[in-house]
Image 1: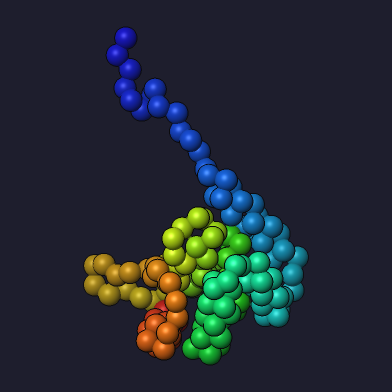
Image 2: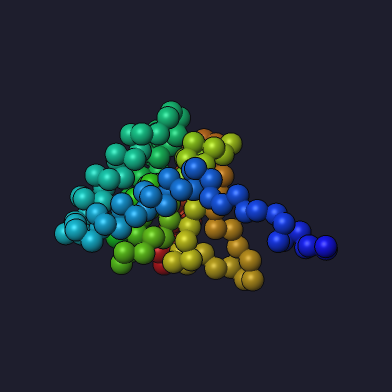
Length: 149
C-alpha cells in the first residue's frame, strides 16, 4: 500500500516551552480580565518576569523597559506569553523575549503587526540582542518611536 509521507509522519506537537508560554498567556488573559487596567498592575507583572530572568538578560530587559518607557510613555507595560511587553489600547506593540525562554542563542526585541514599522514590501519585525550599547539603544529608541507614530 502506498501511503503519503504526511499520513505516516506524526506531528510532534508543541514543545514544552511553547506549552508553558501558552499557559502563561492564559493566566495573563484571566488577570487582565480581573484587573482594573491600571498601568502599575501591568508594570508589576512585567517586573516579576524580568526578575525571573538570568543575567545578563535581566539587566538588558530592565534597560529596555527604561528605553521604551521614555521613548513611548503612552505604551503600557504588561506581560505577553510570559514576556515583558508594551501595549497601546490593550494590543501589544513590542516585546522582549529572553534567550532562555525558548532555549535560543540570543534574546529578541520583537514588534507586532500593531507597530508602524512598514517600509515597502518587506521590513524586519524582530531583532536579535546580545548586548545593549549606546548604538543599539539609539536604534531601539528610533524603532519604538516609529512603531507608535
